[in-house]
Image 1 (spheres, rainbow, N blue to C red):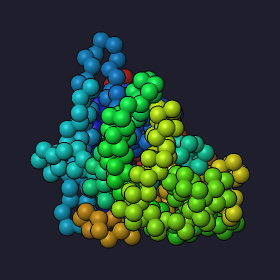
Image 2: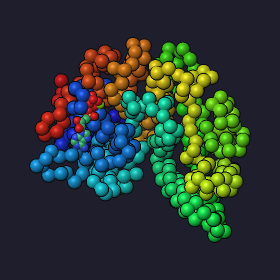
Image 3: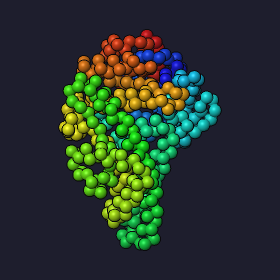
Image 4: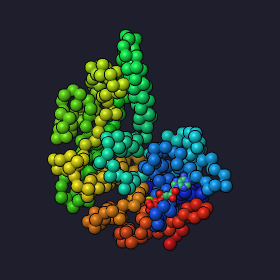
Length: 406
Ligand SMILES: Nc1ncnc2c1ncn2[C@@H]1O[C@H](COP(=O)(O)OP(=O)(O)OP(=O)(O)O)[C@@H](O)[C@H]1O
Ligand SMILES: [Mg+2]
């Protein structure tokens, strides 16, 4: 798929932008702080309803210069060409209120836009996929699961709501010091609900991990020129609780072997409920949920060693890149996509300057084949010649960021 038209109103540093785009590579070049990332962030937001940079939407609406009225909201609009008929997606972000959406000019829930415009973003922040806490990798898996199957967005929301409610019950039990029997029976009701939602979320994530696995190995081989093999495993907190897997990092084979049985949602829900029952006293003591999908992780290995803590800076970069390229390949080969064209728009935000020659060439080779790739760079010379295509210059002016064709 590709975006043929993009329009922004009051998004970040843009006051008004109307842009016609073509398939193939399109580069946005400009000095630091001019609005290049803002532009691609808008595209990614329309695709996932979240930003790859910030957790809250408050920063996404243009902050007006003093003396100018403050805009009430921002609008992102794009026409996506895929399958037989293009789709027109429109999202309005209103400060302090719920977003509003339109699809082909009809009002709809924002959630109904998910899965229509597919994007894969690779950005410097992605080093966090390898280095940071498990929550970053869970989000990676969950986002990909939702892109593949948009109905999972409601499961994810429901799971997080139950998790928060159970956590607040555990906190009040802790504050009360003595847990009454009514408290414990209320807790059991929440155990069953959380176990059911978590089991379904775990199964969806494992499905993603298993489909992603061959592409991660292949993509890592391409970007590292085959110097080592990358492997991924779904690291389940349930298995650690059951004593089936050691919490030590080398237990990856045990986790991989257990993936199949964890896909059985009713059996996993029963196991989770049992684990929660055994953990009640500790959970009340800590005032926190101790087992479930929210404690799981995606383990990343290079040969036999965990990437976190062992891999070099360059290897971590390659692995982060391989995860994104693997997502791109997985989506591209997904035949169930809305509009029948699963190939996502590839977004490469400011990545070429930090890659060495070999990786730059590998990435450029893959991106050159993409139906549409949007690239940003502060310096035009950093863009590989294999990706020459349309080029725009981005500058921030007194009236907001401007984009003009070179
Ligand atoms: N809500 C907002 N309202 C107005 N301006 C904003 C808003 N959010 C961000 N900006 C401005 O946008 C600019 C950053 O834009 P962006 O991150 O797109 O830069 P960039 O061109 O990608 O730069 P770099 O090359 O450094 O990555 C900053 O100057 C920032 O002040
Ligand atoms: Mg940037």
